[in-house]
Amino acid sequence: MTELIDKINKLVNGKLDFAYQTFKKIHAFPETGWNLPVTSKLIQTILKNNEIKFELVEDVGIIGIIKGDKPGKCVLLRADMDALPIKEMTNLPYQSTNGNMHACGHDGHTTTLLTAILILNQLKSEIKGSVKFMFQPDEECDCGMKRMLNANVLKNPKVDYALAIHCGTGDDKFKEGDVVARKGAAFASIADFKIYIQGNGGHISRPNKAINPLYPASEIINEVKKVEMELAKKKSWNVLGIGGVNPDSQKGNVIPNNVMLAGSIRTVDPNSQKVLKEKLTSIVNKIKKTTKAKITLKWTLNYPASMNDDKVLNIVLKSSKEIVKSNPTILATDKIMGGEDFAFVACQVPSCMYHIQLDKNSFWHNATMKINPEKYFPNAIKTMVYSTISLLKSNF
Image (cartoon, rainbow, N blue to C red):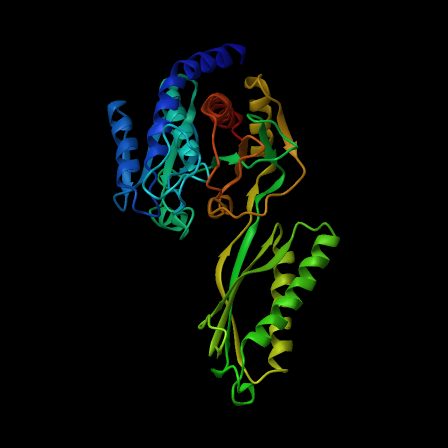
């Protein structure tokens, strides 16, 4: 394996300037959702120039395959391409100016996968099987993964394993450039909800002639807060919270007709999600009995947890330890309560999502989040390339 590691290191070092420049281009023009014409076209052009075949999904998503010189299984490599509608405030020389921002590192994920593909295309003699790759739109807003799965990304050939990378948000426990993975859930499950409270509006001076929906709304919020505090006391990797309160009037002298509460449940195991859903339903039903307002609870989004398969995880950890020498490879014991639509792949094939850590002051979805290319890409690309080859050679 030493000879292969030396070969990968040499190829990665030779592609770093390409990675840095490609990253800056993608970062400077972030696009959102499925509206990714510039980002997708850039990737397509690079693949065509390197004679790597691919197909388009709905004119934007990209699926391709590299066939190794030896028969074997198939591993899927995934990156998300979309950005967020956030005005960037990094003051980087390649800062976005179009009102969008790569504030969750998808520019880094895309660049890592694209560079890894170019290197793997030069290492066909080392590939036992096939490497399928996917550049996915719309991870942030509307679960673009489901549309990619509907395009049969896991078939023809059948995918046996899947890998994905994510930048690691700022954390004092880790250093910039560390390779970090987690046993079990890489990301939490999501159960988003909305609670609609219909009252009867009126003038604030005549409360007896109205049904104020803000009061049952505040009772629900207080009850949810009690659960939130209870979970925090237990140091549980579970969250139930309300993040939005939207009355149909903002005036101080108007009792609104309606209020909508928006919130989310985050857990790392299905049973905990079930328990918290039942708790929220119980809270809503309890408040219903104390008010003349009509209350309706609706579940609006449901993602499973993105689970790391133990065998795939161990191969990634072992590969990273062997090839990455500038930083440690860490099996973390904490959990990340954000959600990821890569979970819909991990539900179907043995998978692993791992992280390359950012500076401790960089946080997802923040207008000042930065990826340092020199710290991020060497470790990200090496880990992806070597883990891919190692996984196919393992043939478990």
